[in-house]
Length: 127
Ligand SMILES: [Cu+2]
Image: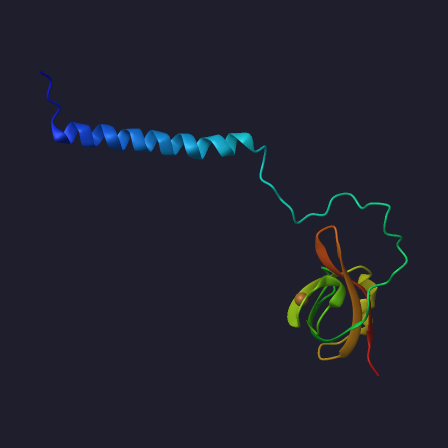
């Protein structure tokens, strides 16, 4: 008659559990290629003609980085980006536009997501 001490059975059970856990962890990871990264849009389709310019959004200039071509804006709701009001940094498509701006200016701008970066397309002072 064989008699396994309780400790040994416990260890065996733990090892079995750990092994099973490893298997369940490894299986889905192996099944997936590399990380799914849904943020970057796929190649633009031809379906949307490049006609519609985004709507204008009001903002206040908070910081200007001419060298980097970036501007920090406290902006209102950006409808085309589905973005609530906030202060954030944008790339600027045409950095020369920054030369006309100063911190504290009330501006309006259009923005879109270009190559994964929120980018100011047009920006101008509000009267
Ligand atoms: Cu924002």
